[in-house]
Length: 202
Image (tube, rainbow, N blue to C red; front, side):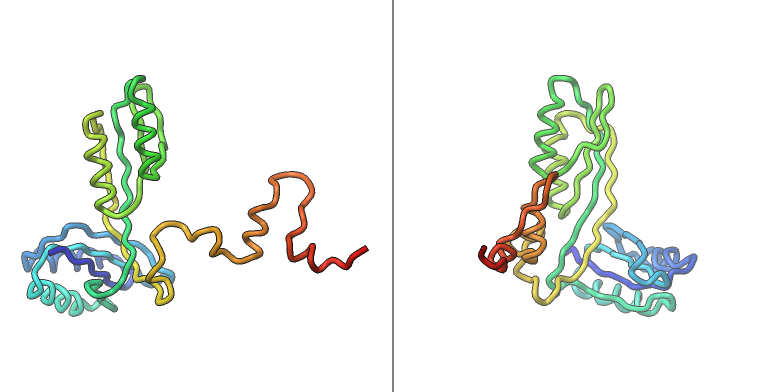
């Protein structure tokens, strides 16, 4: 079974090597490992995806916690979370297939970030399954290059467990933001409904 762990580590040289060596020495298999800075520049965050049974997972957690540069280890097994993977994929794109690839990218909420004489590069982010599905759909066109960042994850806020992974709906935005969104792109600003109601008659 696949599991997602995050480790908050000191932002120091050699930390990644310490973690990688621990996994290698004990024969643990890493599906993906992503490292990046956190809101505190003194610390980095490792997101580790492993395939393991419960016993092995418990060993991984304990061994990670023993590394002196690891501050905190978190297992997302029973925590609601959002996960994302980012992919760049370069596809062979003849003139008669470009529009099809562009439509598929749009369907998956991806975007074309480079156009060559005979290729297109698509950027796509989302859950792993979404990216895997896109890869299989475009494989017949010919994949020239593919790069993925690996999974990053973050626990959901207590009040947002029921929210979707997509953008917040317009009707959930603050009143002032909704009003601003309705303003024309140019020309004189139009008064909001609240302003009209507050204006004295005459």
